[in-house]
Amino acid sequence: MTSPLPADRVIAALRSGHDDLAGYAAGLDEKGLAGPSGAAEWPVAQVLSHLGSGAEIGLATLDRALAGGGKPPEGANESVWDRWNAMSPAEQRDGFLVSNEKLVSRYESLDAATREDLRIDLGFLPAPVSVAEAARLRLSEFALHDWDVRAVAQPGATVAYSAVPLLLDGYGPMLAWIARPHELGGRQAALAVQLREPQAQYGLVLGDEVALSAGAPAEPDGVLRLPAEAWLRLLTGRLGPQFTPSGVEAQGPVTLDDLRRVFPGF
Image 1 (spheres, rainbow, N blue to C red):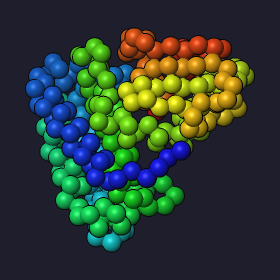
Image 2: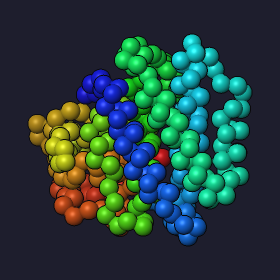
Image 3: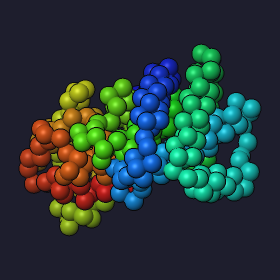
């Protein structure tokens, strides 16, 4: 189902996402930074801290790959997290603005051959990945946390449209560990998932395991219709009732609340 993505498109989406969120975050006052986010346990500043520390770690990972490989020093990531966690909310916001700009700029500096040939060891996957895949994973994290930052203060906020088509095919391989099929109490179903903006169709099989396939099942038990960005948020635990747009429909034996329990977030 997943096809290779040109690194250029993903890097361009990282840039537009950074510029947009940086403009929003720079205007937040103390109250805005301390306010709630779409990530239930984190205020807005902590989401920005997470993005900023992740950008710092991601830049170090990319630079190691450019230098020929190697592992980070023992405890390197933990020391980064500890430093960011000790910052004030304003420092976390300001640090994010600098750290994420550095990461995006480094990706932008890669020439065509490097974007095609470089392989990056992210440390948590079985093998090094391409520049396009490393950037896509960062885009997934960034786009969803961008939504987290805005969700409470901006009702109706959506995942950035520039990111959505680049992320749609990335979640299938993850369902085995992010889904909770036991929440259905033994019920099983095959759903046709019909997306819009952009249009796409998938088959969602809910059984002892959860699987996603390209194209709708020949004889689905039910149909789920929703915007593509809302689908991404459903899969990542971000489609609570207060964040669900109009036009989301679940028909058949599995309700939207059932699906919220199957995909609680991670």
